[in-house]
Image (cartoon, rainbow, N blue to C red; front, side):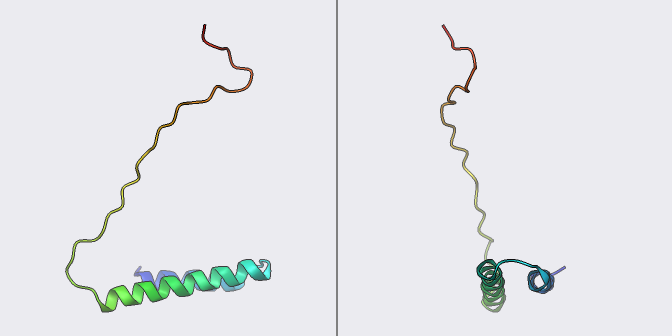
Length: 72
């Protein structure tokens, strides 16, 4: 399934969803923005390598849970 077909299906789901007005408008706008980004990328597509984003896990010190034994 290509991205445009997926967006069409997502758009149909969003239109059929029963949500408060503000959330519904936000979802429809998000689908429009995705469609514009995908079509712009398809039009200006050159054989460049795709950009890969890596998630960096930031480990923070664990805070002791309530009721847990404390180290002596």
